[in-house]
Amino acid sequence: MLENQRKTVDFETLTDRELNEILEQFYASLQSKRGAEYSKSALVSIRAGINRYLTSEPFSRPISLMKNRVFMSSNQVLGGIIKGLKRDEGC
Image (tube, rainbow, N blue to C red; front, top):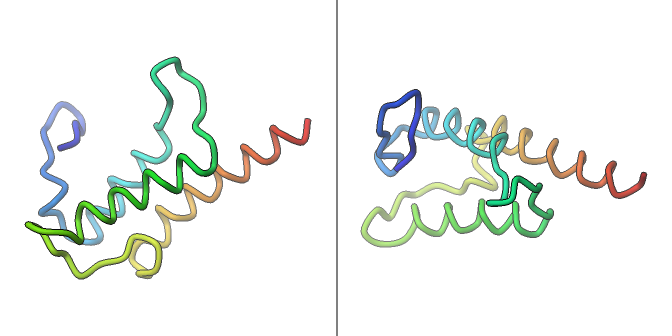
């Protein structure tokens, strides 16, 4: 469940489009407990974990957060964060 503007959201039952919008916000807000940025591998693993959770029992949703076009914008947000990490490493 996610907190969205003080409302509890059962993201397991959202439509694909609604889930994409929530994921955009979620990816953009990710930070470790200490407020640091996650590594590229950690970010990719978080997305894979969410995908595995939604496609496994009991939900068994026929989706792929990595491949379905409906999740393109949330993947672009994640990709932008990863590019920012690479840019920061180059400094």
